[in-house]
Image (cartoon, rainbow, N blue to C red; front, top):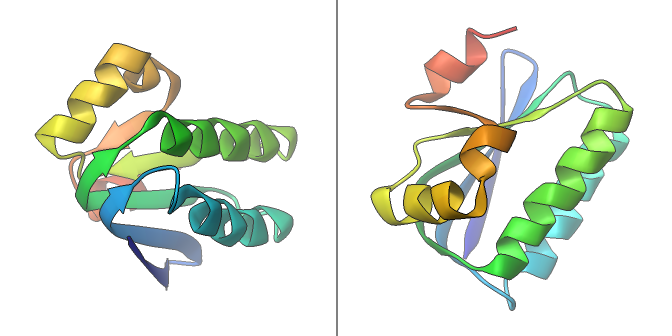
Length: 110
């Protein structure tokens, strides 16, 4: 999996490309933890090019969200591909996290 980091309107936007599994989840957790330490107002994860997410990846999302909540911040997802959206639906993540079709849609929500 590749991780691409940008800042959009002063908000960290992380784009994930490939497969998020037990092997790649550690790198993602390290990357996201750095952002959490900087206390962002929110963190956006662009999953439009994520082909697969395992339970290890879901665990990272939960841990990061827990830490963001302590700072009155949140994580939002954009561009969920059908297979990833199905995993999110089955795991209850669609109810736990805000998700949007596009990055612009997420940026417009305060």
